[in-house]
Length: 441
Image 1 (cartoon, helix red, strand yellow):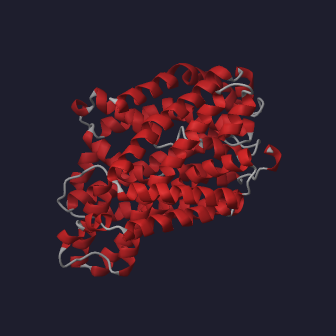
Image 2: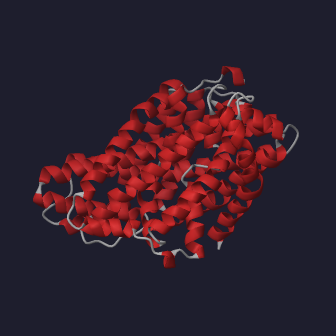
Image 3: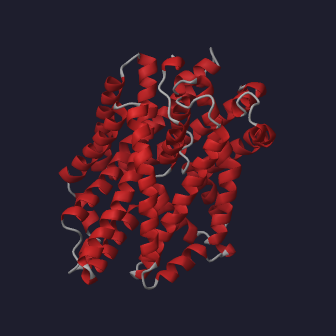
């Protein structure tokens, strides 16, 4: 029942939602896309979409979750009894499960590289060999599977502890630590010789590169980065207290996410250009180019190279865990409510299922790519479309406004509701369809 559900603390829900949004995509995908599609021009478009499209979509999912006080499937069923909306909620959670499975493989890579950094660092006598570590690791069988299992297992341990003792406490410790680490890494990266070229890559506006494809990518990046469409925001918001301000919580989550993405750009690209490397998208940037940079540092100062490698991969690991636990919780919460299972049993079932699918993804790159494509481009998009259309067209405007404004007690929220409602009904659904068809094509 909704009344017996655990509740986040005031800051806990903000940090937990920020943790779900902050992930590996902020670290490698955002910096690459900024440089590829116009630098500062891309950032301006990205920020506009973040506030006009992603924030209303995030709010819609959050409003559904807090009003229902239930997990994704049961929330839609309780607010629209006797309809088929609940099945779209189930589809969103299925997407979260698939992402949980292959995302833990990537999280395992970050755990593996952190362990390498701590134990022996990267070969400063032969920096070129550092770039080949990733290929050797992923080509093996046992090493990535073990790292995948450890990463997934640790994430599930946090979920077993519950909302207050697990997710809330972990977020309160690790999210501030995450920001301290990323800012420290940025300051060091900007001090490297040749870092100015990396700054130019990120900040120099080039409107000729801001093509229709680039605009669509800015829209997609702002959307995916906020963990919308997987039931994650809905589930976390169902643990939100009624007196909390849902608008300010959502805005702070968005600001944290944008801040981390931008700072990540100032960490990665100046270091890449300082080492004379070409920036690339995907795991190769984080797990091939960056170790090469740390190996070069180690040649001049072994301690500095080791410390920076540990700091960088610890940052990636924490960001990966905060996103992973949010997706696991979305799945576990639904099993607990639908099947009346205890938290430990539901988490154990998700662990076993995600472990098996993740192992398959680790051993077969085509399976990994398929799971990534279908979850990101089909399940997430359908889930996001369902949540926004449900909030904007199915729910009564008065009920939505009451939740948005805490029954009229919040003056600023009351003044902004009309603009939010217009964006939610008429701008966000077409934008989601643009992302959907752009990615498919």
